[in-house]
Image 1: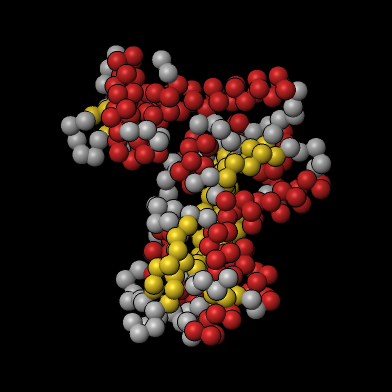
Image 2: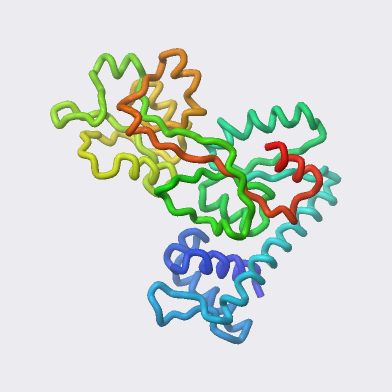
Length: 294
């Protein structure tokens, strides 16, 4: 039995979609289906009811899913612990977070915590939201920092973890002051004067939030550049390349100095929540201190 079969099944149990699960696991759908079938053959009963659309877990699959989740988490924990002991390393507190949260929020928070607790060791894994949620699901990290938005469905089964809402974060449309003044940029733009638009990849969480914020309003946005990272869009914005929706934590200094200016009214701004997730039973003493003081 291959542990990847369990990881595949856990992913399918969450998505209930072979295509989406295969994409998240970064393998072809045919290979993914074969691995699920191999797991079913190993167990001896069907885990998936393929006669429905969308697919659903069979009764055996529903019973086996929490076992698979716990097994993957325990094996990941054991591997990490053995590696750290072999290297003689202190235990690291592992965070999974989107790049924007890691750079603009987590780093200063942990720097302040380290001043009070210099013995803490931290490892931050910055990745896509899907990959970060998968790390928490599989025990690959102790903590997940995660944006939440009222109009975007979570991809994490939040019932399996405890959640602490830390603060609000706003996604603000901004442009370089000099360029916006020179070219007369303004939201929503007009057909005769479209606004150059720097966009997130549509498959990212922030891209989905921006799409929801724009909604059905008529705009004249001329898509010029696309990237998954907020920091990359910020750098393009600072060169006068167009407007972008950027996290407020990342642009406070530039807004205060006047280098960047807000575009549009408050109804063009999206409010999100930064939330911290963990499994309390998996925290050691230092991890519990981080949770209590965060």
